[in-house]
Amino acid sequence: MIPTTRLLSCCYLLSFIFIAVAPRAIDSKLVTSLPGFDGRLPFRLHTGYVEVDQGTELFYYFVESEAGGEGVPFLLWLTGGDRCSAFSGLAYEIGPVRFVLEPYNGSLPRLHINPNSWTKVAHILFVDSPVGAGFSFAKQPKGYEVGDVSSSLQLHDFLIKWFSDHPKYLKNPFYIGGDSYAGKLVPYIAHIISQGIEAGNSPRINLKGYLVGNPSTGESIDISSKVPYAHGVGIISDQLYETILGHCQGQDYMFPTNDLCAQALDDFNHLLSEVQQAQILLDTCVFASTPARPEADSGTEYSGGAGRRILVGNPPPRPPFGCVQVHLNLLQQHDIHNH
Image 1: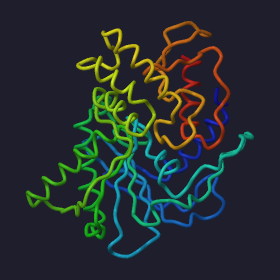
Image 2: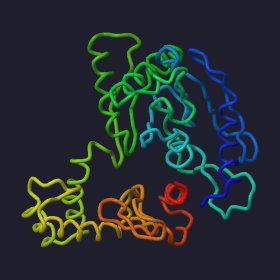
Image 3: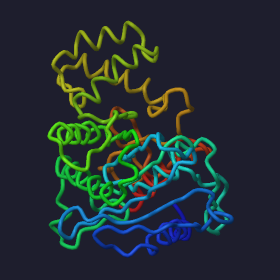
Image 4: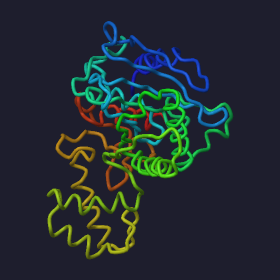
């Protein structure tokens, strides 16, 4: 379980950013310091809101590039989830700050500079999307009823309004990027922008391309595609690969009805559980990466999806600091034991 004081400290850090901005149709504030960071921020961080539908406000973090110049790439970065806060992309992935990895002592978590931040070469716009993620909100309950298409349209509306308010960035080469669940949204948003360019709409966004990392596309594709990938990088043998191809043709990889297919997939999932799936070259974490809600009593074993098993009542030791999934795993174990 994560100590309540630790969660409150993290919430305090995010609340500091949130309080600095009063939501209006378009608003932006320069943030010069952050709780946990020693001294003035050595980069320019802007936070603000853009109204995309009546009563719906999307919150953003905009970090100006350290590179300077007119030709600096401009990147819209979307996080996974869905409904994960954009702050995770800023502090855990490609942004200019990182949490200091150290044992928690009850004080406010410390921040330090990320030497490998993408902001060294690009302007980056992080957006809390869809509405309900991070600090984005709707004034009416119905405003939270959005799906992949409607949230993509809201993000396009966000971009049109943001660039209209910041026209000096329109000439910069523009890219859309994201990871995980954002893999479903990024190509569609790029398509909408391309249609606007062809139609001669204004403002004209200087779209140059998009990039996705470890993207989600849909369960049927995402799950079945793991087999040829694992074979291609040497995680599974030729024999197991051919067995799966031979017995799982037309099968649902999550719920196979063919016994030989089910056995082969169990073997496959056992091997895959030994690998850090977000980055196969890194050490795997102790906890499973995507546990399902337990159906058994506390202290028993239940399936964590894709053949993984998790002990509910006796969780394994915490992963070491630096493990890619450590923060997610601790939160998942906290959720398991409190629900």
